[in-house]
Length: 122
Image (cartoon, rainbow, N blue to C red; front, side, top):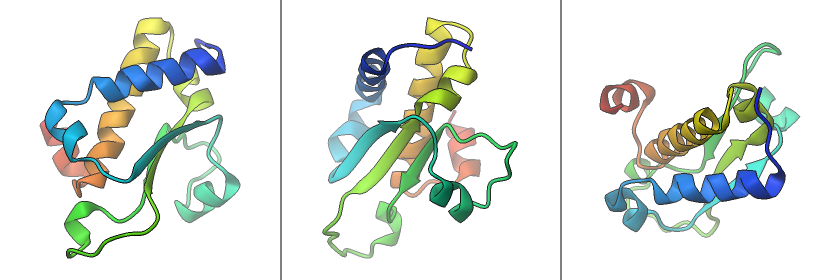
């Protein structure tokens, strides 16, 4: 487990956002990317996660591919979970990579990609 301060973590999240391909960054609209320590009990319940399952990040919203041209009033949200990301990292470089990978994964959900397609692209 490798830990950083909240400020350092948020800085690494910003680096991860900047590491997204420009094609994706430019097309993201009305998306809040935030950091939380852990998933909430409600998030875990909604996803039907067992106590031994880890969640590094979460996309909440309606994927672009499912909107049918509708305009949303509330922003979509991508949350990165600090404690699980730190727990899965053994050093700074691994933490940076885990954050980058999680941001990419959740951004892909925003664009409507499923897990199989995300893994194919990785």
